[in-house]
Image 1 (tube, rainbow, N blue to C red):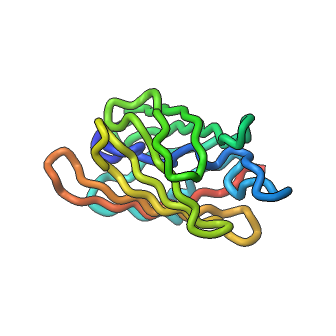
Image 2: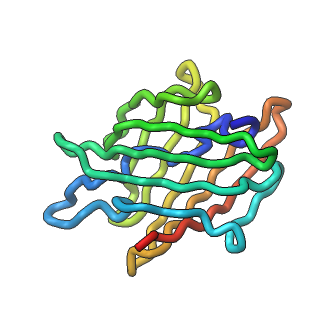
Length: 161
């Protein structure tokens, strides 16, 4: 996951809050299958990812399961899985040497933020917004590479139908 996923990316996404947690009787806006649109995404400070996909599902007890797969610019694949909720609590992440936990907060009905942690230290900050029609997800990720140089990814993910 190299420099980008000193994060989780997101990745991020990024993350776990997405699963099918029920907000009232509505599904969580990020539940589903998502694919990165490289043409609409912008990468600053690091080479662009080759690809990224998310699958977010609802689990029992209001948790969301996030499964994220990506390919770095150099061809290195990445994979993480985790359960989480938008409750400000820290949840473990498996599969990354760059981060080991995530914390999500809900800012609005279609807006969330997260931090990715490594040994309790923030390594990446992410901000997610889902479109009103539920087919687009904007994800802004910020962190620093291993030399301390800042990077920002402006990702556009599209729902796979």
